[in-house]
Image (tube, rainbow, N blue to C red):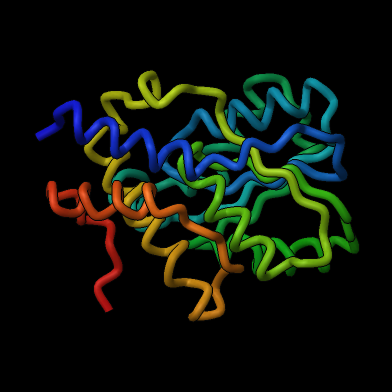
Length: 216
């Protein structure tokens, strides 16, 4: 059940997951696939505003989208960008990855195949996955300059019929757990978690928002 206490705790996690980076011009817009098609729209917007000359869409079918779609995340995202007017020549597609680490690894391989070596990236992801994307990118690509952004939507306005608030909260809880424990597994760099954010995390788990937790 969603009550005011739950929403307050969820908003605390939402705010923590944001990196609040200021945009700077970069060599490449690197878009991490997901079930949120608004991420593709944000990437196209950044391209048209001149923040970078090319876009990489990365994503096959992940934990959520393999049950929703048959077309890969990257291909759907690229189609949205092209429908908005982005030239297909400005787009690269990596459509095999199934998680954030693979997004980076497979994109590294794609760029090597294309003889491209961008030094700076604007990573575009869902709002509540900014921090984990940053921590993963920093671990696997530490020598690159990185800015993370997402669709500019408030917590209150974010949920949709396709992405209900319950799913958003469950994913935020699971992602915070991964931010806490993935550095020890070598998946991400360490990120400090304030005590009040970790307390809110515990309150949300106690309220039943535990479907996205890792169990091992």
